[in-house]
Image 1 (cartoon, rainbow, N blue to C red):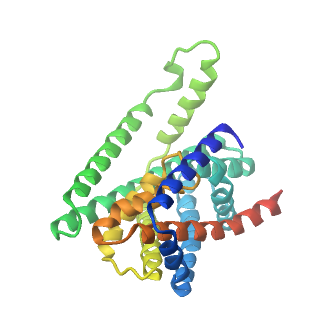
Image 2: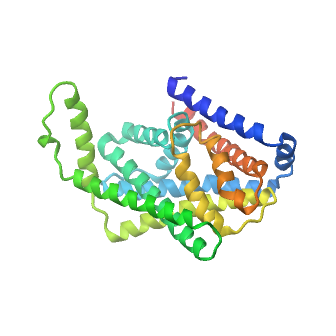
Image 3: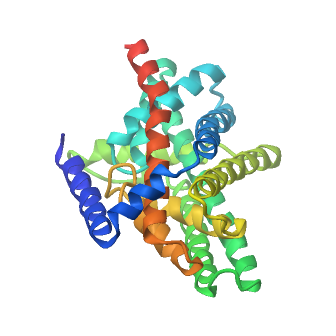
Length: 308
């Protein structure tokens, strides 16, 4: 285990230790033991179904780069990357494994890396968009605090500004950069990657399709947590999940824990405590999601071993 993973493990264990020392472990045990297995099984089906939507969305992006892998192959890579990539920082690890696996077969590493990045950007935009719209509606209905609307609006604005800067960078060719020494290889590789991002243009039909698929992924995630909370006996308003689950996954992208462990549970309590949901229940919900994620990794592990 490298230093980054050791650090992430300590962060996860540290946050979990703080949470576990702040709650009634007996109550936590009762909440988890009383979880409805039917609702948890439904949530697991949704967890697995996300992989299919993600694979199809990536296939749509790859077609824009004139790369045409078979869907079943992409689905296999998505399952493998979600399993192996959990050992690497945040969502970045999953993307690295995805790029590497497909590059070995297609041999166009730069374009594939750009497709993975574009796929990630579209996914992030859909998270922010859903969080923004839902938080504005929630604030208007007095369901959530207005601060979430301001946070979502600021995050969405920041995203759009950064993306516009990305478009400026694509106009800068790597031949214009004067760098000598060992940095030249790195700068040239990075510049070619930026150029590959600008080499593809999104037709309106493709853009609409990608946004629809991305919104579908976020909606499935929302339903997963809504179902998990139902399994624990919590009947909170669905709009709360529309606001908080996208924000939760944005928080979980921070590369400081193992699979979001600890950070996820703390964020759930921060979001839902005003609705009367206890720390024990939020912790149980986060751990239940982590358990379902671990189960969903098994097909990817099997496929990875099969390919070796």
